[in-house]
Structures are given as structure tokens and as C-alpha cells.
Length: 170
Image (cartoon, rainbow, N blue to C red; front, side, top):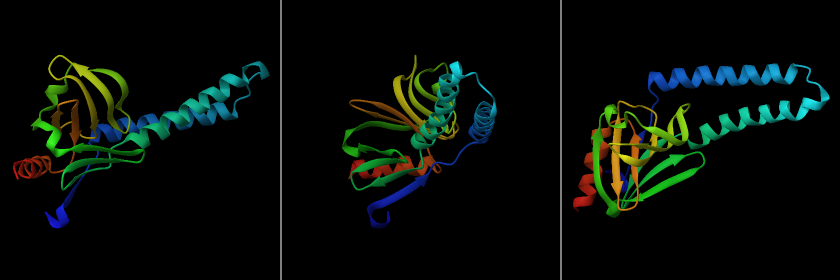
């Protein structure tokens, strides 16, 4: 690794791209039509509430969308617009690639099921409760620490996993 730091981008799959594009078009069009429609004065609160909800949905999704995973000397960092998530490598009990089927039958507790990726808290019989930041369900990485379980995705997932394992061994 150069300078003890290596980064892996989080590219979108075709599915995430399609879902995000369709939902953004619907939200923007809905906002436009609500804004230009004449609401009765007694319903103006509803008009502005809808507009705020649509805008917060877009900004929230963008803010929590994973941008890149970086391995630094002693930690993994998931970069997002709204802050980063740091996982100390010494705390990792297990790291492995998992197929999309491992996340099957997941219930979304809180988060996004495709808009800007699969983001938030999920639960299923196989993995239990976990936090996911994935933009491509075909490149999943499972990380278990003593306190939490994570599912991420990134380009070159095998290289990412091997780099973490190498640091953990040294």
C-alpha cells in the first residue's frame, strides 16, 4: 500500500442507478406540480410539508450514500457526505465477501432500499441485525466486529478484503 492508505470507490449498479433516477424524477416532478398547483389556503401547510419531505428525502439519501471505502493504518473509513464511519481493524472479528443471497429476506428497519443505494439498518434470519451501505448488491463485503455487523460494497472487493486481512495479521 502506498502511504499506508488505499481507497476503493463505491460505484452504483444498474439497479441502483435505475431506482434512483426514477425516484428522483418522480420527486422533482411531484415537487414542481405541488408548487405550481393552487392549494386552498387551509391546505397550504400540506403543500409545504410535502415539498419539505421530498427535498429532505433527496438530501438525506445523498448525504448517507457511500462514496468510498479507505483502509488506513489501523482503520477502515467509509466516506459519506454526512460524515465518515470508522471501524478499527483491531475490532474486526470477521471479514468476507458475501453473495447477494445473504441479504435475502432482509427487513429494512430504517433507511433506503435502493434510492442512492441500500443504506441503513436491516435485519434478516441469516445475518441478524446489520448496518448496510451498499451501492452494488453483487459486490458485498460483510464485516463483523464485537459490537456491530456491517455490509458494504466497493469496487475490487477481493483486494479490499485481502488488504484488511494483511493489516490485521501484521
